[in-house]
Length: 475
Image (cartoon, rainbow, N blue to C red; front, top):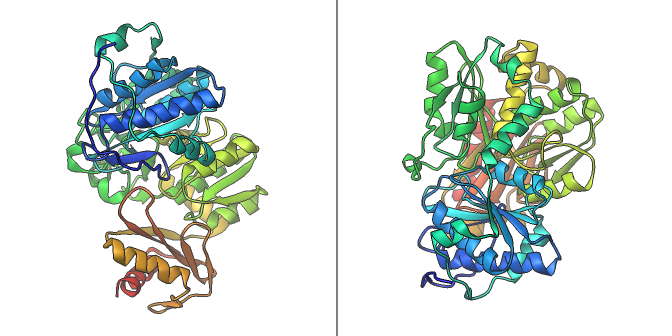
């Protein structure tokens, strides 16, 4: 077999909250992808799993090259590979892993990270992220140097153990089976979608062709911006809605289309906390679904109140969707969600899916004839209003370590005008200030950032608490 080997530094590869991510041509190299793929193949064999994997890549730079590196290892290990021509989203790979009874799904993606990054996600046979124990098992098997080389494109293309499938079409077929798309199309409501140059760009174009599209073309550099669907990155989508009164909602998804961003009819950003609450209400009241709700430690406490209203059990997990997924596959569940925009529901697979969540809410609007702001007001009538915001602080590593150590030692009793009443430390440090307000400090698991989260009754107070917390910890 012919092929090439790359010479690169042998880094200690560790998976974060969702996969291994690193800077392209620094730690993220063909050689290191070969190492991780070899470990994945060994893990599959050691666990007597089916010798079949799904592999796909998103729109990032080098996607086909890194995909072919992983494919090469699996083929040389005697494992069948199912893959697609062109880019695919993470939910597509997860869904196809389930539909084809694969032992694992591999996605070459760095999700919402800056364009200089790429990554490697492992999905399980149930159509969701591999759980923490499985990730640790793969990490333990990563060799210092891979014994494999990359096969040529023609060898891969013509290999009898490679099957070329259309993951995007499989996903769209699944959408058509589960949504009343005619109801959305004929609702009289007009929508907008910002693909952020990511892998979800073809889906909305195909299923809802009247939707106004932004950044729905291939651009591996994402125009220099991290494809993370948060308000500061979506100003063009907000402006489009504000300048066109006929557009009643805007949806955005990240680089691999598993995270959601959302705007109401006024161009106001609707955060994940509100999205989770809306989804719970729709699933319970309109779909008659029941089950446990799982949300990460950084989510609003208002979810507790809505679950109490509907008599639903609620569980709080560590941050990282793999922890939520583990709970969803082990017990009857309604929904699993994160503050960062990753949400899964029982009517789909146990995987984050930004497009799927957006379609549920657009179907909700179409069936009720109500705008998002009206639906949110109805939720407030049940649980009270609130606001959430997050600061991402870039600080020196030594300062970050010192702040986390101060949190561990209990050195923060006040943040400006706000006194700490109690503390939780499930994953990060949450300081409760009063019945309706808290602030939380946690280092990012995938980026060199210190994240500071806050909940309070109003946006103005939330910003005040965040500003005073920032001043306290950075002084």
